[in-house]
Each structure stands twice: as C-alpha cells, then as structure tokens.
Length: 263
Image 1 (cartoon, rainbow, N blue to C red):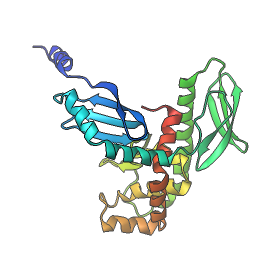
Image 2 (image 1 turned 90 degrees about the horizontal axis):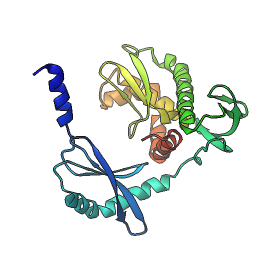
Image 3 (image 1 turned 60 degrees about the horizontal axis):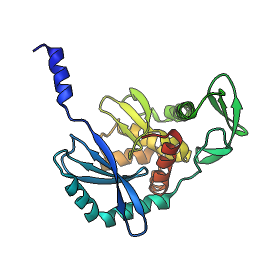
Image 4 (image 1 turned 90 degrees about the vertical axis):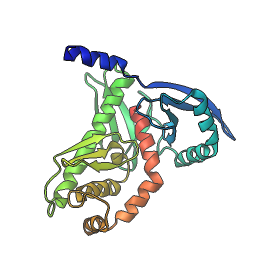
C-alpha cells in the first residue's frame, strides 16, 4: 500500500473527540457540564476551571458510567465551583463599542472608541484607545486585544530581562506568550520559555517573579532547595507574589479568557 494512502486510511480510522453537554442538579443550582469523549483518555476524569465543569471519558466508558461518576462527585464539584465563583472577575467584560474598562498591570483603564481605517489599540495617559473600522466585529476586537496584550507583555520582559541575565548559563532560546490553563510559565529542555498572557493583567511584581522563576530553571531544572535558593538570591519577595497568585490567579485567567473569548 502506498505510504500516502496508508496515512489517509489511518487518519480516517482514528476516532475523533466528541463533545456534548449534560445538566446536573446541585444543592442550590442546576449547572451545565461539558462531556468530552476522548480517545486519548484512559479513565474518567472530572475537572473544573474558570470555564466551568468538564467530564472527560474514554471511548470505552458508557454514558451511564459517566453520569454515575458525575453524581458520585457532586459534592467535590460544588466545592470547586464555589471556589471559582468566590474569585470573581476583576473587571466587567468588555463589549464592542460600549463604554467600559480594560485591565492592564493591575489597573482598570477607561476605554474610548474611535473609528479608523485599521484596527489598533494604544495605551496612553487617558486610558486605552481602541480604533476599529466601521465594519469590524468581535473577532477583530479579540485579535487586536491579544496583540495589544502581547506587545505590552514583551515591553515588560524587555525591561526586566537584562537585569537577570548575569550569572545565567545562557539566555532563553525564545519566549512564547500563550493562554495557559493552569501554569503561569514553563521552560522547555531546549531553553524556550512559555509565559501565560494573563500575567500582564496582574500586578507587575508578580509577572516579574514568574519571569525570574523560569529563568532560574536554566540553572536548576527542578524545584529543589538549590532552585529556590537561586530564586531567593534574585527575587527575595517571591513568597508574597506566590500568595498573590493563590488569591487572584483564577480571576486573572478567567478575565483573560473573557476578553479573548478563548476556548
């Protein structure tokens, strides 16, 4: 069999991820749970994040087994959802061409709208100016918001990075900015660094701590006492920033997903 035909037949035979929703009654409300049948899943798994509840199931698991698992974990699910509800959002969602505010570096900046030939977002002394063509819709706004936050984030990295490079064995091979579900940053074996875009929404010192944390992994690829000694030497107030993420991290991630309409 020709290699191309073999690949096509293999791809066609690979089961796809299936998604639907089901409703679950809790003590004080009825919620919607995303049910995902994933060929990669090896067991039933219930998870909660800022987007809501998710039940992941192997393809071999029956729908009845999934619903029993969900009901058996109702109390845990209700507790987790309450934690996310208590975190709240640090700002109301931004609506297209409506008065509002935009969160940047732990500050709520007033938004003003302008019509123009190109989509552009700028921060100035008066707040944030969003320029949009007359026919631009929500997708154009979301793309512009992401580009705006990425530019602001790279400006902060460019300001902080030089002061922490002395004493490191090398510089990061590249820095990627992305929406991360749980982590705030990571460092790959090849030296590439990933940072959560939500960092630019919070206080700058917390963002700076995450940058230092990941840079220290160039020295210690673990979380050993030796690693934390490197962090302590470069950023003595790291414990306060870690507590900040414990208190406000979920809300920041939820705010970013709301702004970008991320999946």
